[in-house]
Length: 388
Figure (cartoon, rainbow, N blue to C red):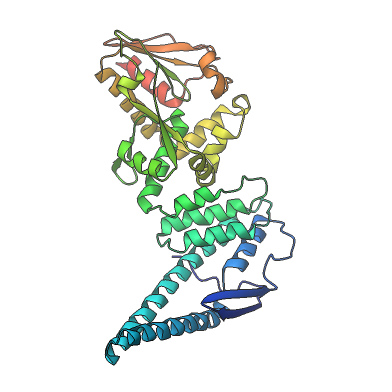
């Protein structure tokens, strides 16, 4: 559970004014306001200064809420009297309104505190990152989207977005992403991680996986939830060639209609906001996929990063599940690989080497020349076939 933000230095003067039901906040000497932002920690503390009132002034904040609550109580009493409800009824109604208001404000304040505490803690771990000032209009959009987020897993995500927004050289987090996360539940965080694992392993998603952490199947229905939240988008598959990131599956049609659509239906990819979120939550593996030209990547680092993100046994299981769908359809196909240095965007036009064929039974070809890259899950699968 996040601890209170007690003792943040530099927040010294906060004045408030209640006018017609609206709070106007005047702040001076806030951390990061008017000061140079050198590190991401500076940037996050500056954001905290704008959004958060620390423990030292909570009594003043509480008093502010009490004033507003009392005003709401008076309005409720007046409405009750206007309706000629008996005296005990108007007191009860007013009291209920006040208690609801206090409960709502308390929950929203606690949610904001938890997120900001987490953001400060995350920023301290990013010691090498340079910072940039977070615009107040972005902080406002953050505020209206986080105030009702009470799940700790989702609060973690928002905290990481604040750190990313305050990091120099990183892409700004869009309002679309902030708005979508407002509707996230803990299960959506699990679904999104599973989707990222499949996408970064295979380059697209046409099947699900058995999640070893939650022991549940995460597939079309769960990814459909992500699509409704705007994190992923589906498209109809066509043709006979399925790009799998580090290998290719090519269907050999026997009759009209033998194609990828008849077997898998659709392929799912990141939407803009989904790609944006994945880069924040899983920076190491996303950097291997988005951030470097293929020929500049080291195979050993690429494979170890992927193995840490999705366990080798899970990689192999997911690959076999895809192959089982095709073999159940009894459609002949081949699996081929490309040279390591071939960019993803050019692989469908580049050189390929067939490593195995299926036509009712498996036929393994001689080992691929060294120029071709065979991913670990495919190497293990071929070794199993050779061992039979």
